[in-house]
Length: 346
Length: 230
Image (cartoon, one colour):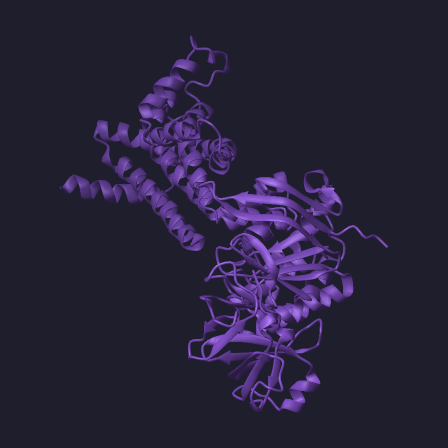
């Protein structure tokens, strides 16, 4: 079994024109066949990172290894097996058929072209008899996005990189995109790297989600991030006051009062009723909230419960069985319980 | 005023009866302008693509020169080409003076800046996502260039039609290089100039009608292409 990761990044730096670093990633690796999600605020460097991985941009410093070789030394065939769907996809001013067929035509793979185009259009939920001869301007936003996806999928890429593929599409298109991508991955073990603001959708296609923040990969995005300020208490704990007046405690001191605390969703316990005092409970934090969303995590098959704590949103990872026994639905009042020592610092 | 009306009536008669002299000028015009179009497109589209697509030292200066040449006076081109193709000139042996190919060569030089400049603008105006998209789909080198030109095809066609309009309506080059020789190099514009000078308004008006019809057709094509390109 080949253990070399498909991608390895070493001390990657990418500068803005003004010289400031936009991206700085000391080490990062992506395994073959992995499905990686990336989240983070706009301007944090997600798109630039994706373009570097898609070999559309070169870093200013550092090295990107693809299949164990520096990208500049890899074969053109390997480079062409990496494709990217841009955030706002560009369709060629041609028919849908011509758009989808283009990738194979430039590779001179014209055998069975029509059949392949029709099969790929079906895969993304666009019946060829209805869509193949449409022109680029005769499509809705979601249809255009799916044509763009089909034009990438038809080349059976080893790596499919997508930047906000569901940002401007309807719900149906988002589901069809997810299904098409998952089908491709099952059939061809395609490595998937996708950035999205839609964490729920992302969890349905990605097995690991990383957060890119201010040009750095700051960890797994499944962690809850809790902003400061954090103020010291007389008993050695550090306290944050939530927007509705409830308080949260940390056992370890933050680097500075504005530091962001990280909380693993698996460290959060949920209870329908408030525990009787803290005497019989080892956890310091018992906070009242309301369930706002329930979704399934693709790789773990666990339930992610999003809970509003009076203005602060946190995610708890629980088993399906626990969710069923708690009888929780969006709108259910709930108590969030976790140890003060569960909070870590970014 | 009467002679103008008489001229118009006679002009329509000349057109309807297929007057040979009139149609000779029309065919010479179409032949010369078509040849010049082929030459200017063959040279201008690649040059315009290079100028619009790539960044290189001196690009701005070249662009400024090309844009200045858009307003090139026809008589200056005529003078320049005459100097080269006359019997004493370096290209005198090619015997282009007073021939339709000679007119076409001069018209090519006249409209080349139009084709280069408008093609460069069309390529510069291409969506910034196009190159990334083509690369992501696996296109390389020549494939990217061809696909980019195809994406700009309506704008490039606008350049071609604009250049054609300039070629069929110019008079200076046709007069100086063609010599306005009846049955051989007399074009619509040189014939109008000559006939008007002689006081023969009817043929001038007849040819004017043909020229206007051509200009109208060219303009209609421009309008359609502009609509399709947006």
